[in-house]
Structures are given as structure tokens and as C-alpha cells.
Length: 119
Image 1 (tube, rainbow, N blue to C red):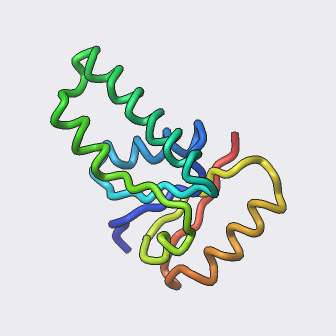
Image 2: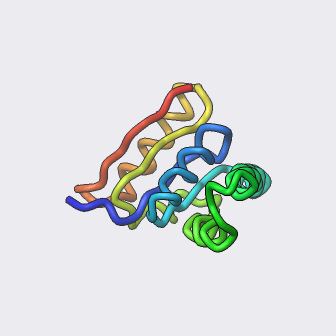
């Protein structure tokens, strides 16, 4: 199976970093969190990280814009329904993780890959 689209659940430090790396490698990513303010904070962290790369001349402004354009923010797990790979990066609370995986299991196709990240 070829991975074409990715969802990262959680827009905190780990989640936004994971989303950024996938986007830098050309993948469309939906970064999902429970509140829009968390999603916006995560997008801001990606922007800041990429700005540092531009300043260091590791990346140009055009590439930075392309990377940011590959990341879509959302507050709905339903936006993960069509992805091939999910990386869960929510807070370290088993009940929360279990709830997320249960909801994702009902939404995703049978070939979707579910993965987790721990800090």
C-alpha cells in the first residue's frame, strides 16, 4: 500500500513537528486537535520552525510556503477518514488515546495504518 495522505492527531510539540516533517517530504497532512486555538498554535510553531530554516538558508520562502500549504488544520477526527496513515500524538492519558483510536477505527478504511507516538 502506498501512503498518500497522513493525519496527525494532536498539534502540540510532537504533533506539529511530525506534521511538519511529513509535509517537508511532500505529503499532504491534516493536523487535528480538539480546539482551534491548539491547531492555530501548532500551525504557528510550524511557521516559526520553517522561518528558522529560511533564515539559515536551508530552505527558501517558496518551499516554506509549499510546506505550510500541505498542512491542513482541523478540529474534527472525521477529516482523517480518507487518510492512509495516522500518527496519534495526543497527551499521555490512556483514556484519551483509547477514545481517539476507537473513533479512528470506526472512520478509517481497512488498510489504514494507525500508529502512536509517545513523549
